[in-house]
Image (cartoon, rainbow, N blue to C red; front, side, top):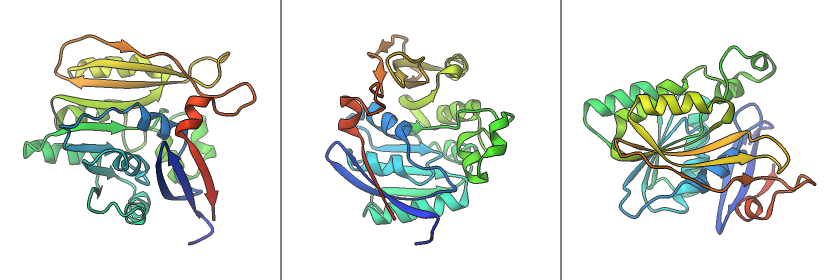
Length: 250
């Protein structure tokens, strides 16, 4: 293992995993954990796709909870290599498959063969390409946080091609762009069925939103109670702490 790579050991509820991650790439954050715990999967679900899987943290955490087929699609070669290692490290090669592909191309090819799935999940880039923060990040981190390889419209349109009728799309997103997200979902025939707003602290503005949208179904939405992540002393609140234990080791 080189100096750039560390193992992150996570315990989410009773499920323990180990994730190899590089300092110069996307690393597992609270966003990942919030999305995984927001996702609800029914027994009849057969196949789930993670758009922009990066190091495969989301597929691995979900695979520990649900006995379903999971596909991770990732465009960055370095991330794909790490994802494949992580799947093997957690002994999940019989359950998770990683594809090195552009999401837009992958979705179109599968749609042409009428290969539909039950669920798509995505922790997408939150920021437009032209923000000044681009210049301060490592190139591989830029691609994970900013819309270089994929944008919101492509994510939603690709999900619409791949999902069965009444299939589900789960996302976490920057709440400042909630209006864009809702417009894109409506454009591609999704109805938001469940939403949860995330606050960093009780006295701070909301910064994230969790969405469960269903393809080609009737309207009718549940708004979950707000999720407040941190206490005033910066520790995780009891609900988050129950989900999220982390320990970095070299």
